[in-house]
Amino acid sequence: YDADAIFTGSAVVADGAGPDGVGPGILIIYPAIGPVCWISRPEICDCCGVSLAHAVPANYRMDPLLHNFTKPAYNPVIRVNMARDPSAPWQTPHGEWRLRTFDSMVFGAAS
Figure 1 (cartoon, one colour):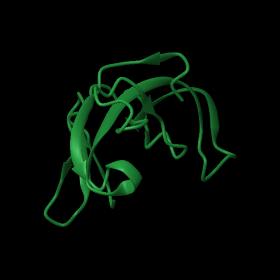
Figure 2 (cartoon, rainbow, N blue to C red):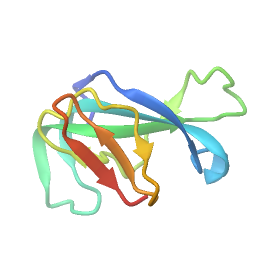
Figure 3 (cartoon, rainbow, N blue to C red):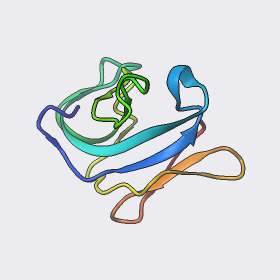
Figure 4 (cartoon, one colour):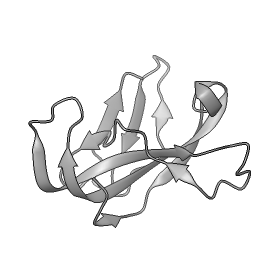
């Protein structure tokens, strides 16, 4: 999903994103171009697509300056055409996470 290019993104500190899913941690959301196949629906596979992906620090304790990030297996998190320049994600009072792209499209997720 990001084999061909990675573009501008954003980062946010979020509760529950820390080591082992506990405490605050950093989430990075970035647009990427590359082959896209969905983990939950492997029959949907495009040769090339634009998606929004997610990365987290690989090891908070061994990398205090956060040079190394890992990409969870459930990527891409959003697959759409032209999903560029995502804003920093925010959480609504109801717990839904949202972000806005360059063209003012708003995307949301339940968790």
